[in-house]
Amino acid sequence: MALIRRYLDDGDRHFLHDVLGASDADDIILWVDWREDEVDIVTMCEGILRTGALSACYRPNDISADLEIAYRGKMSIVRYPDGVADRDTTLLALNAALAPDFEIRYCVDSDGSDTAALLPLRGEQWAILEADAPEQVGRLFRPLSIESPLFT
Image (cartoon, rainbow, N blue to C red):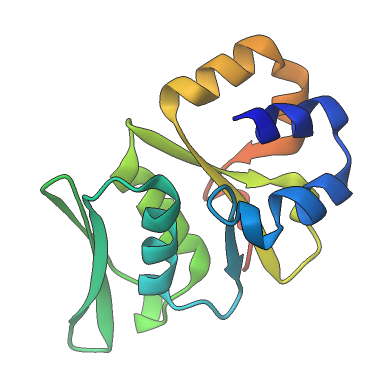
């Protein structure tokens, strides 16, 4: 949280890439490339959150495969339009599966890249950050939304 607070105070897009994106800080930001495999997205998120209860696998269907996200004994099935997986649908489904325990938000400073930076935090951590620095949080982090796709 100390690095996130520094980022809120600093507000420099280079901080996101140079500090939060550094290899020794890879347990903070979820970096998702536009070609990322859906199961890998969930696996990387679990690597950051370390819940011990989040996993994913593919479930074959008539067209291709659905993504199955398991979290704390609850199973979520992600069906992709036309059988074609896409990062936006995966991220929205992952965010929904983790709620209300966690929320994933988009790091606005990664806009314009083919790799999106996302910050998964506990709900109470987001609440604390918003109470302490509402303007900065609103400017630097955007909630995931079907109306604001990151990749499509």
